[in-house]
Image 1 (cartoon, helix red, strand yellow):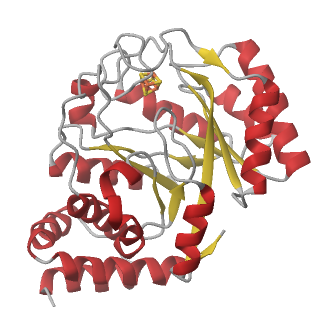
Image 2: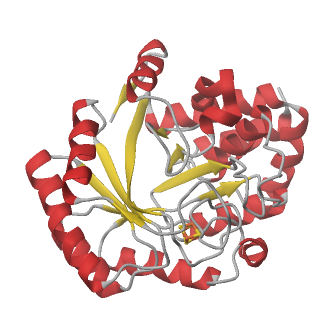
Length: 325
Ligand code: SF4
């Protein structure tokens, strides 16, 4: 067994956080001993989560037509992609039908995602009504990703029944300006804090394979640890033709599994959710994400790309002897 990986794992299993210097040594060791890294990331997952995996699905309440310029995103109206430049908003019936389908499929957590920097007052009023209906009448746990919100908006969403707010940091503060120029990293952190001030759980993570360095990945993990987020969505670039990152080569499955494992060491009690890019980039190694330390998956379609059906994912979890929560 690799001594550095083993010592780091034992410290995490004893309930102590790793410090930056230790993490840097762990990163170097991980490059040499992939099997040892996955052995221990799996031990850490089992200690803190047992065999429980959380499933969630999302619906694009508003798709495309975004005036922001996130370099990986098919929904930015600044790029010529397969997504319409005019925002497409689902009707109440379409959103409620998607929630009912999640419930039928045994997916207990349902999220509404809006493209764009923020929502208007009229949109917020409509969302309060939909959230109340989905949580109280259907009994689903609800999360929303509505861009940058303030504390008052967060309080209203929480009062309507929302339990978690999604707002990704996307990458490290250092790398952020190379990926997004239309808003600041600080805006994202402020929105996370606003949601926290209303008592909402926080789902915040980012996207990998967008030209970031190993240090950027670790910096983002430490920022998320400082923010005490409870769920970290991990997206792996699915290059979208027409975006500035459209020709970026995707990460290899082993690199993706290494990133997940390192996050499990750094964020041992945090729910790690593998989201966009899972099916495209991991291919046959999808089920390895749990050995690497993942404790959640986004099932069904992603926002602008196809995913796997809930039935296929539930079968995979059943075959692995895992339970959903
Ligand atoms: S990630 Fe969100 S804010 Fe950025 S371009 Fe896409 S929809 Fe707009």
